[in-house]
Image 1 (cartoon, rainbow, N blue to C red):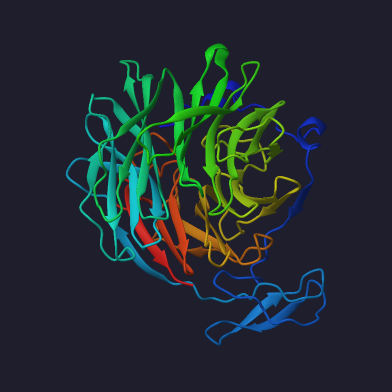
Image 2: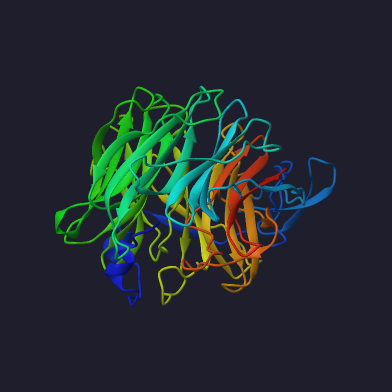
Length: 475
C-alpha cells in the first residue's frame, strides 16, 4: 500500500529541473552506463597494463574464456566483461491457502545461509503478511505462513532484515480501512524469528499514529534494530522517524530524521548500515524547491541523533518509487529511478536507474547503471557482497508498460563506477505498473548478493495473478 502524498501534492504537472538552490550543496558527476560491448556482470578485474583510454582491451574471464575490458581514463584496463551469469532456479514460493495474490516481496539472508522472504498476502477480505524460510540456498522453502494484526487491521508493506547471529526481523504497518477505502489508525509492528527458527514470534507494537506509510528495517553494527517510517504531522508535513531497539526488538525508542516544512512532504525513508562503525545512513524522496529529489541523511551515533548538517540532496527529477541503499565502512551506494521527462502519472515506469556513491557524505557521484536493452525500468533493488565489495542492481524491465518483460540485473566490481550489461534473472512476466491490476508487481523486490550468487524474490504474474517467485543467478 502506498499513500502517494507527494504525487497528490505535485499533481504531476511540473517540469522538474535542477535549480541552483537544489544542486549547489554537492558535487555531482554524471557518468553514462558502460555500453553493451563493455563490462559485463560476472567478470573480474583485467590484468594491469597500459592502454588507450576508451579503447577495448582483451582480458581473460575466471572460466578461461576471452572477455573484453574498457580502458579507463588513467590508461588501465577496467572490469573484465564476461558472459557468465546463468539463471539456475525459478520457483514460486508464496502460493498458499489464504491468499489469491502475493505482491511486494522483500528478502534477507543471514550469515549462516538462511533466507526469509516476506510479502503482502491479499485475500478476499483483507491483506496480511506472508513469509517463508529457506535453509539450503533457496533449493527448498517452508510452507507459507501468515502474520499481521490480531485485532483485525489490514497489514501491508513488509520488509525483513537479519543480524550477524542469524536472527530475522520483519516490520510492516497495519491500519483500519474506512468504507471509503481510506486507511487510518496505523500501527507499526516488528516480529522476530530467532536463529534456527522458521516461525516469527508474536509481533511487537513499535508505534501508533493516525496516518503514515512504508517502514524499512536494518540492523546496525552495534546490533541495534532500526526501523524507519513516514508519519504525518499536523499542518500536512511529513515526519520521518527512526525507531531503535537495543534489546532484540522487545522495546523501542523514537527520534526524528527529517521533518518537512510549509506543507511539503517526504516519504519512502530507507536506512542502511555498514557492518562496522557507528554510522547509519537513511535516504528518502522529498519535495525540494519546485520538484522532486532524493535526500540523504546520516547519523554517527548509531541512529540516536540525525544532525541537520548531515544531509545531502541528489537525484533531481527522481521518480516516485522507493530508493534502496547499501553501505560498507564510510561508503554508501543508493539505487533510485529517474524520469528523463515528466510523465503524466505517478506510477509511470522510469527511464533510467541510477546509483549514487559517496564517502563520508562529501561529494556525490551519480552513475546511470541500467542499460538500453529495455526501454523502461522500475522498482529496483541494490545489493552488496560485503566480502568482495561487488554490487548488483536488479530491476523490472520491459519495452512497453503492459507488455512482456522480465527482471534484469547489472553488476559492478569497481565501487559502482561502471556497470555491466544487464542479464535476465527471471522468467518472462508482464511488465505492469498498473496498481489496479491483479498483475501489479508491487513497489519493491528483494535481493541478496552472497559469494557471487544473486538471490532475488520478485512478483511473477504469468498466470494472471501476481505471486512471489525466487530466482538465483551464479557468477
